[in-house]
Image (tube, rainbow, N blue to C red; front, side, top):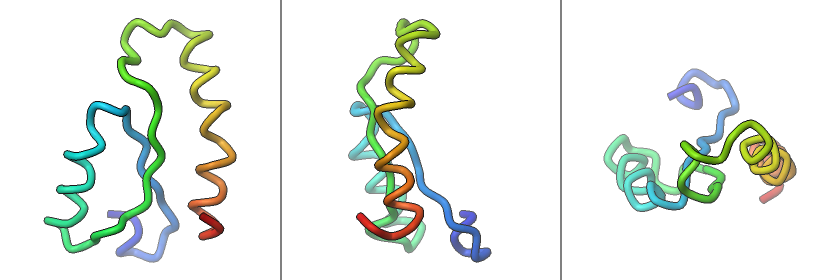
Length: 69
């Protein structure tokens, strides 16, 4: 993980994978690893749908990266 090398990082996953991401962070010795969640599925969202999800997540990602969350 980038965090272990001193690089600020945050994960992004869909609602379907939150429990798996939480478990993996714990298994990798990083419980509480920050991540942002977008709606699942994304495979049929199309360009406009993906852009809307990304735009809605930007403020949250910024807060997580700057540790304001």
